[in-house]
Length: 256
Image (cartoon, rainbow, N blue to C red; front, top):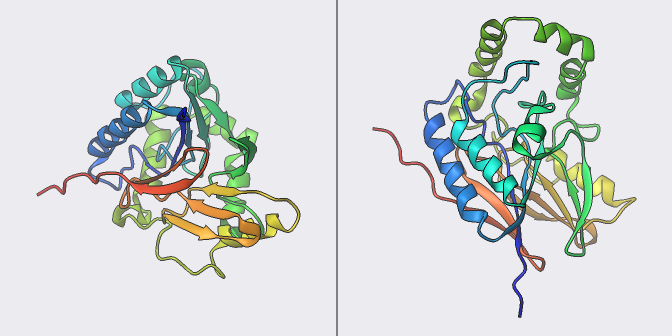
């Protein structure tokens, strides 16, 4: 019997987060995971907020992430598809990663079929009528004129400003979105998935954004999978063509 190659999903690594003091440690751990899963991966889906901040100037990209980007390029060069979904923290990924690294960038929802199963894939921010506050911010962040204006700022000032904004978030305690699981009747992404199922069938909804690893049975035998994060949970999902499983990877050692 031939063993099918696997499909891997991970999100919310928030590499370079100024509110965290273990960025290099977490980057090395995520690279370790990538090197492990590439051995039997058909495709790897990075479901958003891989970077805590990313902005591409025409002649410059943010400093750092050398180990991660090098490993990603090696995986893409080997023929394994890597799909990169932009999240609310790395919404300004444009053409550098696909051109230099070889990833396939998705700025919106992706509906696709994998091994005969229907998947609805997205980071999860701003979906449906629920996340109203972020919808306003997203309109600002995706405004072409404002992106052009931000690009005119010197990178030291612009990136410093972005890091200052991020450092005031709740990310420092690992709970930027994962304050608690609110229940299936209050979780926006669960409600959104069930709304979609009223008009279209899917087998799996895969999201990040909430930082809360979840595997929930939905209507019509569909499943909601949230991949969690690489700040406090270090979780990922894997699909082997028959079953979907949410797994834990090792956690970094606590600093004394």
